[in-house]
Length: 259
Image (tube, one colour):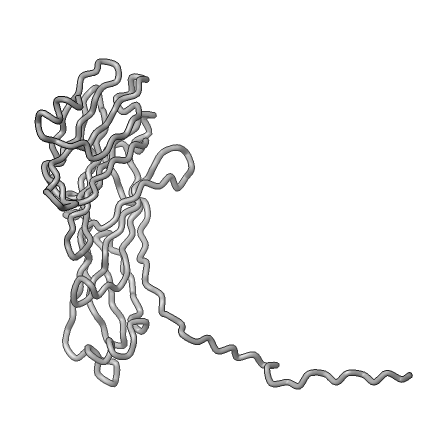
């Protein structure tokens, strides 16, 4: 395997071992790629699975196969007691987005059961600024979230709001494509869920209002949303003032010794 990869001028970026074919033997899962000279950028990223029982290997070519820090995670996501293959690649874009793919052996064949492109097409949102320092995020599943913008500070608010709290002009933000994907066993039952994050942007990418978080679970056919949250940033408290009702009370006088 190593000699063949060298002959093809590929490098092994990462290796993981586990039973991904479901035959009870340990298989080896590789990510191979071509590295750009003097750069952490990888191209032609390819998934290679070597069957531990037959010593045969299979190559799977990814649709988006260039980026940074490509990684493999092996874990059970579908409930068949066989480890699945999760691949995540950083795009390097300003929005911090990623490419993600998951593969599973089904009926003796390796199949793709998740990809970030399909996720981005399905999980869509509207972000609209409202009067009185609010932003409304409407989700694809008909849920509405209200974000209080007061934490953004006086200078930020003065740029887009009048003194009476009304918008100077209409503003629409957006929710970026997938920017984080983490396997988490929330139920502690040995089966992982997918914890996904997307940036909620205001006027530009760096103007982040928070994160849209979706927990995805395998339903027997696909990864479906189990629950959804919006996470927001906290406001820095430079000074904390304690308003204690007894703070100004005099200490009690000491009793005089009668002796």
